[in-house]
Amino acid sequence: MSNINIQEQDSVAVAASFIVDEQKVKQVFAAYTRNYNPEDPKIALKIEHTYKVAEICRDIASSLDLCEEDQQIAWLTGMLHDVGRFEQIRIYDTFVDSKSVDHAQFGADLLFGNERLIERFIDSRQLDELVEIAIREHNKFRIRIDIDERTAMFCNILRDADKVDIFRVNVETPMEEIYNCTTEELLNSDVSPEVMVQARNHQAVTRDVKKTPADFIVGHLALAFELVYPRSLAVALEQGYLNKLFDFPTKNPHARECIDEIKNEISERLSCS
Image 1 (cartoon, one colour):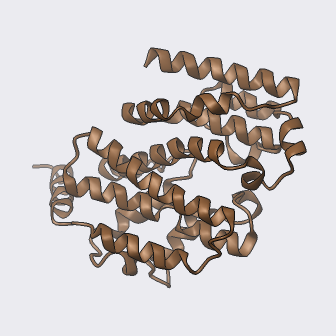
Image 2 (cartoon, one colour; image 1 turned 90 degrees about the vertical axis):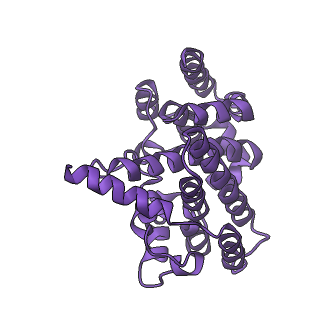
Image 3 (cartoon, rainbow, N blue to C red; image 1 turned 45 degrees about the horizontal axis):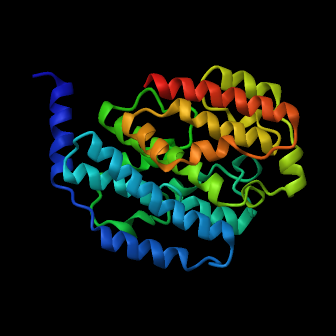
């Protein structure tokens, strides 16, 4: 038997013996987030986002016919993936990583660094490495190529779930709060050429080319091109938030053209899926 097969069997054995105490995780998460201002819309947004992503992770994992323990692991990554957001808001008052800190790295450091925050959530240390990698990779343009197949699966489940709920967040939350801009700036901003180049390549838009509020809107729409699992795309369609984002009431004619172009490209992809 090859070493790879032995490692795969060991991974399955670890998963089979690991059960997440979901009630405890929720209690610890609630206690942790009470340290922050619940009246701050950004804090409230990330609390709700966390629960939504966790359940979408479970939904995607179930669609892959994963065992109950693996579904719990997927759920756990969703519950922990944005822990860094709360300190990010407290310290920097922004969700824009380029103006503050990489929230995925920050959160993973809080969980698995000197503070060992992870030990408050789960007693077992068997899956620390898998969960840490999933959290560190959830906001990256591409996941590391050296990650084993099983860990990559959990990374992709989390990344898909996060993208799907970002569509909801951008519809239900005033974009001015998300992007730290005025309504006038939001409605009149244009889309940068570099952003459209990447969107036309049917890829996520990288952080370094986003300069305007409209750039972030197009960037969020382009996330639909990156969804890995069929169930992820199905959930995005069922929720209806993508179509609502397409109807963003921009007053900038060029931005309208760009959004409509992305809409047509995504609609074509959805119709072919």
